[in-house]
Amino acid sequence: MAAPDSSIEAGTRHTSPDEDPSQAWTDLAPDYERARSREDSLDRLVEWPAQRKLLGDVTGHSVLDLGCGNGGKLAELVAGGATDCVGVDITGNFLTTRPPGLELIRGDLSEPQSVHGLADRTFDRILFLQSFGYAKDPVRTLKAAREMLADDGFILLTRTQPIRYALERAEQNGTSLGEEYFATGRYTYRTGWNEEIALTKRTYTISDLLNAFSAAGLYIETAIEPQLSEEAGCRYPHKREWMNTYLGILIFRLRPIPGT
Image (cartoon, rainbow, N blue to C red):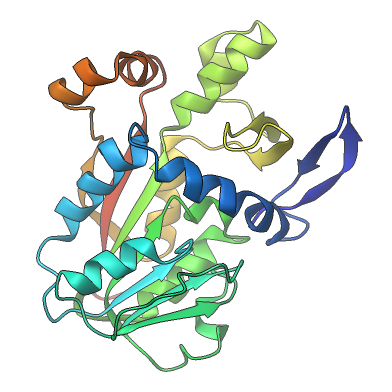
């Protein structure tokens, strides 16, 4: 849900999240799904196990996944007992075989209340699994998601540790970690899923995330920074080296602030 920038060089297409919220993710989605399915994928080794643990027992609970990719994770939740699950993604490149109780809708996560099929619906769990960075107006998107929560519902939100990007920029630019962490504006990087596509995104800090949550009327019930297990680290030392350098991800379980 990022998009093409006007600058193109050496066969590399540059994208910007503020111009067209669909193009980059549309282009990258197949590469992402292939990378995620690898045995040594950090999503398989670290992210999804931690996300699944924070979700807890989903039996009988409805789930909305905003930025669901192909819908594979939602399908797993349905298999685990979740009901009335809906996934929204801008690409529409969804699973061809879907279990009963899973609906997949092509749409923009930035305006969830405007997605066809979601009007006046509420959900027990709402997920932003590495998709929140594609929201055009993060606070507005979170407010809309909060309004779609059922009683005692919560939002599960995953974001890349911002220090990762700051460190990568410091290495690239020959600057310091502090300079890059507090830099403003945009930066360009390649995901590793497809070296031909360079994304241009806004910088952010941990305090930016906290302020966005508060402005949307949400508080952090739980926050974790999942690590690679000792067994997985021994099995995939290249992943352990990467995690030890770039830190990985942050996962937040968010609930509405009472009275807001």
